[in-house]
Image: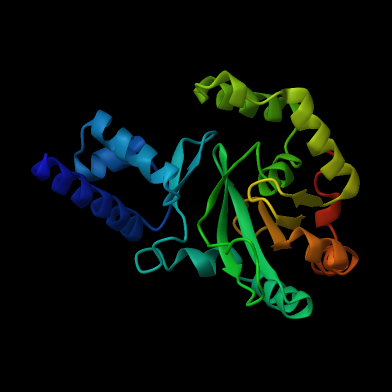
Amino acid sequence: MHDQTVKSARRVFEIFECFAEARHGLALKDIMDRLGYPASSASSILKSMVTLGYLDYDRDTHVYMPTLRMPNLVDWIKPARFAGNNVLPAMQRIHAVTGETVCLGTQSDLYAQYVHSLCSDRPAPYRQKPFTVRPLTRSGLGWLLLSAHSNDRIEHFVRRINYETLDRSERVRLPDLMERINKVRADGYVFSRHTVVVGGGMIGILIPDAPDGRRLAMSVHAPVERLEEKQDLIVSELRAAFPAGSEAGAAVH
C-alpha cells in the first residue's frame, strides 16, 4: 500500500509537470502517450484531480486543464487568462468600494469553482478561499454560470448530476432549478442567500468575453444582512465594470 501511494503521488506531480511543459490543455490519450500510463490509472488520477479542484475538465472537447491552484507549476495560466482584460483591476476596485470579499469563478464540468479572491477583513460566517469547489446546481455561482447555457444544455447537466447522485433525496428537480436560473436571467445577476453556508451570501454577475474563452463570473461575498444593505451599490459596481454581463444570460433559452 505504501509503494502504491508513493507511485500515485509521483504520478500526480508528473502530470502537473506534463502540463507545465506542454503549456496547453491535454486529453487523456495525450497524457498516456507522454507518460506511458495505463488508461485506467491515468483516468482515475485525472478524475480525482478534477474533483479536488486541481484540474478543469471540458466535457465537450475531453481536454483537461490545470486550475490556478498550483501557481508554481502553471504560472503561465494567469497572464494568459487575464491579459488585455480589466478583470483583476475591476476586482480590486469593487473590493475597495464595497469593503467585502470579491471572488472570480468559473465552471469546471459539473462544478463551479472559485479561482481567485480578494478577502475582506470584516466578520463573516466563513472565509471564501480560492479554488473552493461548489455544486453547479446547488450554489449561487453555479446558477449564475448555468444561466448562460441553453435550456437543453442545462437539462443535460441535470441528467448527468442526478445519474451520479446516489441519494435520491439530493437529486435536482429541473423545474425548481429553472425557476432560479430564469430569475437570474431576468435580473441580470444572482443574489444567493444562505445557500451554501447559513448566514452567508453572494451577489454575482457574468463576465462577458473572457480572454481565453472560458465563462467567468465575479461575485461579492458577505453576511446576508450586509449584502442586503449594499445590494444597490454592489449591483451598480458590478454592472459598471461589466455592462454586458447583466445581459449575458438573458437571451439564452
